[in-house]
Image 1 (cartoon, rainbow over the protein chains, first blue to last red):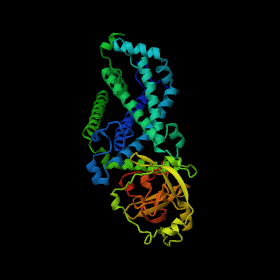
Image 2 (cartoon, rainbow over the protein chains, first blue to last red):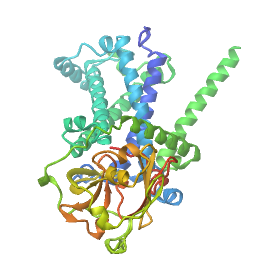
Image 3 (cartoon, rainbow over the protein chains, first blue to last red):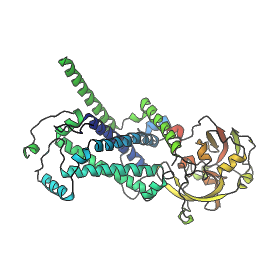
Image 4 (spheres, rainbow over the protein chains, first blue to last red):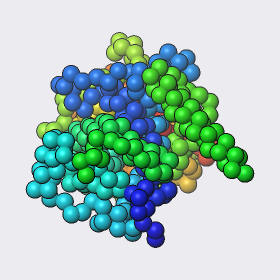
Length: 226
Length: 241
């Protein structure tokens, strides 16, 4: 099997496909999940509501005209359709990461001291960036988001099948609590995406590399510190 | 040749840019991507695929978790698309449960006949498609005992139901024969009042709440997949839990 990155740090075509399919799956799962959440919040005492217009499932009026229903059916159909994409893509990514040693070479070693050191350096603006090389904060965040996706998938299964997979559901503290775990899993992933997108825009070389599979050299203040 | 590939590249880029802005636009305007015909057809095909996946995952031997009687909610939520005083009022003396389709003995049953079936009590969680759930204590006869008593074709694929309020639906035969699928006559030891579905509710702890119909007037057995009230409005047909 080939490497996950070229020598210039450009991700392989396969890794890029996995990345964008995952982005699509997350977008659909979160968009439809927000509507499902709003219908009957798992955290009823928390005053949190996702504006209907930014959730996935179509406009209420059109849903009423077409289906005699306000749009929960569409959101559920999106959610249980895209879950296959998310899960299959995620499993493919895990296999790929292990087979190409992407996880071992790129996400390790990492530890609390290194994360703290790199975080301080980044805050002082003294952390460089080289394509395909991750600092300790990035490594820790990548492990964390992989874990968050795994927990969110498993808690989702626990909510979907509290009778057939009741062992898994009780592992998450029962049906009601599994909904809460699922919600916080989503919240972590959304938080990660926000940081991830902000940093990618700050260092557009990474975005170009992930989008087009090409190196794009640009003198940036970040690079000069290297 | 070089020029061709350059043009192809430019075209690919502008296509990418267009699809990105289209995506952003649909998100920003909450536009009706979901109700486009092609999207609907993909979503429905995925839903049918999920019917098959759930039928495969379902096991007649796997029981839904049961709880202690003390965990059962006493004031169970009333749930229908009309207020309580508009709920169907089925009188015991007039009520007849009718049968149709692949059933040998289609003579209607009275409430007295139904209530004479051997009964069990179970405390299970009712899970609604909307996300709320509630634990209740139901008592009644296993649905399988009725199906056997009327000589239903147990090798058929589906059991359908029609209700006094116009609600209708259907379930798969393996779920109909599941030991926890009950004709529930009582909730918390009280004969089901009108608002909970007198004379009985089909209580299926391995299905979402909307597959637990009340005020049933007809059961039928068939090999042609029938729809359902919410299923015809886009909800998943199997809806197992």
